[in-house]
Amino acid sequence: MSTSSSAPISVRMGASDWAQLLLLSLIWGMSFFLIAIAVRGLPVLTVVAARVLVAAVVLWAYVLLSGRSIPRDPKLWLAFLVIGALNNVIPFSLISWGQTQIPSGLASILNAVTPLSTVLVTAMFLADERPTPAKIAGVVLGLGGVAIMMGLDTLAGHRLAILPQIAVLGATLSYACAGTFGRRFARMGIDPIVTAAGMVTGSSILLVPVALLIDGPPPVASVQAWGAVLIMGTICTGLAYVLYFNVLARAGATNISLVTFLVPVSAILLGWLFLEEELNAAHVFGMVTIAAGLLLIDGRLKLRRKG
Image 1 (tube, rainbow, N blue to C red):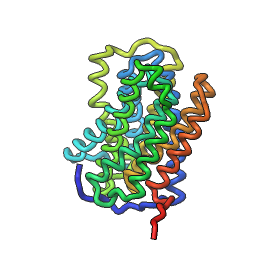
Image 2 (image 1 turned 90 degrees about the vertical axis):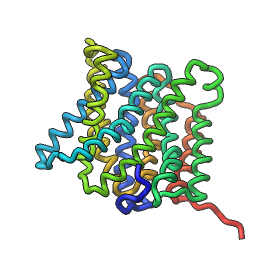
Image 3 (image 1 turned 180 degrees about the vertical axis):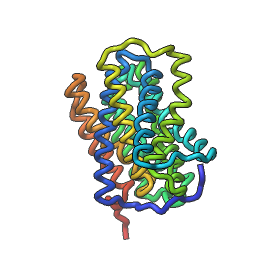
Image 4 (image 1 turned 120 degrees about the vertical axis):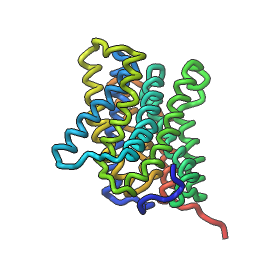
């Protein structure tokens, strides 16, 4: 990852950026619900590989139909492989495996640590996203909010679920590295749609052979399971990453990571409505606490100085 800044970014997001971020949060919130359906009938690696493969087919079809050119630079394709691993292969695998043992709502809550991980990673690699006292305070406050939403009783009462929770937290670190690494595509002048297509293609190259080796040929499964995979590939991956790279280029890694605060809201509501998962006061209070932390990170809340 380069230590230099890429294209100039806006620390404060505009109305268009927030609108895309809100849409992205709804799409990714839906993905937690769909993962929970897919892993009931399909192996984890098969779900992840099929998801990125569907996204690659859909995005390249759009690239060709819209008259865009396919990049041929080997260095660019190597970068696609790297960001594919960081933004898809590693986190999708960790989250999908984690969701075989923990509820989708809890997985999305843990995923909300991503902005906090991003603040730490960008501090090391991006000169224009250095941590300020407000960002550091936001990290502490946000981590407290995540702890509230998880609940100490979750850690104490479900000891076997600790490893899946750690896996999802590991995914947030991978996302943070991906956001930092992904800043270079805007500097290179790559269209966000082409970047998204290249990334999921890199992910497919890495994942499909591994899934076939470990899981074998895709098994016969329910229409619901495969339908969930198709929706995830087309909307929750293909469309979502076009939005992701567009906001990343304009607002930076820290701001794009704020989407993971909004994701738990839609994911928990979907889990509550369709999967009979619990929605309680701790979730709401934790979300409010994380919101305050992320607003500090974004600069919309200011720390008062004495004197």
